[in-house]
Length: 358
Ligand SMILES: NC(=O)c1ccc[n+]([C@@H]2O[C@H](COP(=O)([O-])OP(=O)(O)OC[C@H]3O[C@@H](n4cnc5c(N)ncnc54)[C@H](O)[C@@H]3O)[C@@H](O)[C@H]2O)c1
Ligand SMILES: [Zn+2]
Ligand SMILES: [Zn+2]
Image 1 (cartoon, helix red, strand yellow):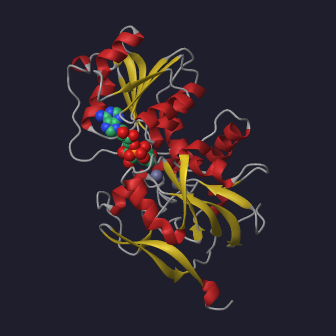
Image 2 (image 1 turned 90 degrees about the vertical axis):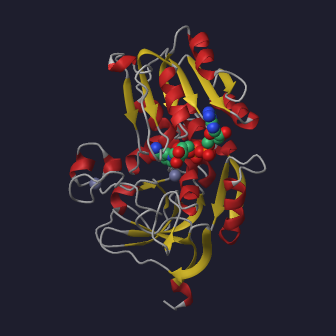
Image 3 (image 1 turned 180 degrees about the horizontal axis):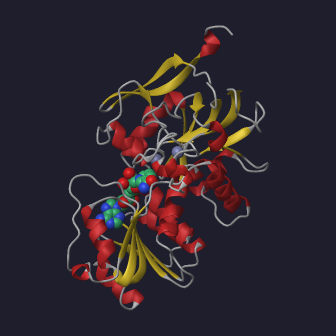
């Protein structure tokens, strides 16, 4: 193999507000690992937190965590795949062998040992990520999900993270057929939570945001009522529309205000399902929790990953239960990725998600 072949283009985090597309060494798979040639990926809100220095990662790291690609090389011990197979890999890559994984908490994977908080999230966090021409997939056997014939890269790329997370919020909320559900924020995560609430059988879905295009998309994803938090008293409106409070509220932004509104919008005994990433101090007001006696539940979810999760989500798309391709509003090449970050970060030009074709 010549040296030219061993290089690749990749998006490297160099420091706060400093990402560069660089020529770097191409990864090689070790035992249990595989290398995929990335054919499509995207930029996540969490990547913005990283670039802005709000979530620390090591300078020199390749970022991005939403890969679709083809198997290029496999290490020893990876079976059941052929070179050239199209695969979707979750943003979260559990080892499938530790206490956390074997207890069903794949996102809190301890990498062969016990539990590690957020341990399942490795791409673009603790190991090199997907905004590159090639990607090393750890625990490849547990994480490469073969893409069924007939599904395009665009149809599956958002399943890796935002759809798995949004659906996870609806599932963790324990939505039951006939429930009323309110979803706070209709960014990409909230939109997927809205779609998830619909799939779970909610009879009334209320979506909250401040952007008209996002509220319009929320309707497309299944919302029955949309509320502009800039225009109305959201909590009062949710109580009115639901006749006393929602069965389940989903928080998909990560601020004190939306967390509190999500709690205050519940009926007694309701469940708050939290997806947002918080910083600083998060406080729970005693009155909204009925002094701790309101029989409420508060649950949190990190994006579920692993190949079985990806397989299920692809079945949802394949059976036409949901279509997330309208969320891909922009497409850039790897060399244009900083422009993609500018548009996505500035919420310019009606952007929802930016597809990146390495
Ligand atoms: N739990 C997980 O596994 C996981 C995975 C990925 C991202 N996240 C987190 O989810 C959150 C949302 O991510 P995203 O990419 O969808 O964000 P985003 O920036 O795309 O969307 C945020 C939305 O919130 C709306 N908003 C702002 N203030 C509001 C308010 N007061 N009430 C209602 N809506 C309001 C904005 O108009 C915008 O549409 C972030 O905290 C992100 O870090 C969590
Ligand atoms: Zn993400
Ligand atoms: Zn594990």
